[in-house]
Length: 252
Image (cartoon, rainbow, N blue to C red):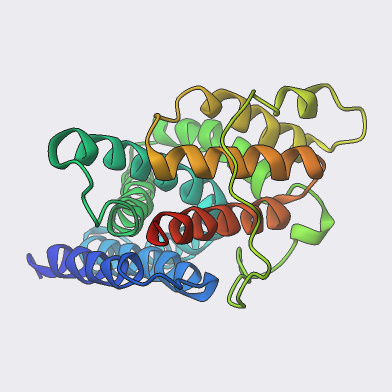
């Protein structure tokens, strides 16, 4: 049991490497990787925490809350994992130059760790740390708005990008933060404005590394093309940007 987290993270990293070395990576691989990351985190936290909870109701609650957290936090975790991968690319570039494996292993490992962190906070809250319910609300409300930006986002799964995305968008580099326009739009929902706010805040934190800059530039253009996209639209745009940037780098 002590080795299970390490084994799961290694398997996720290996799956990420399999995508990294393929010049024709597809959306279903990203879909699978993120779902495996979430499932691995839930299995890991459940095996660790269920027996430590004092009542059967809290044990059932722990599982249910983890499933809800997976649905609500999925898109934000994809974005945060991408940001971690951007900094991983920058760091490896500084030390190893043109290192061939920089993105997808970090992507899935960081996603699993983020899902596990949410599970740990849920466990502590159920185990008597009531103050953490406030933290869950503070973090959960923006995630809830982002993940359910409009009625089309009211789906059981947070993601249905298992089909190949064709055509992939053209690669471009970032020019200027486009997300401020979404904040001032009168047509967007509260969730769409939250997506714009998150994008606006993160925009200036993306490092200047090859894959990172391509992804940022593609997402900038996609947002300009349809600024009122819901969570599903934005997630599809992110997958398309990840894959287009990956293929552009592999084709060099």
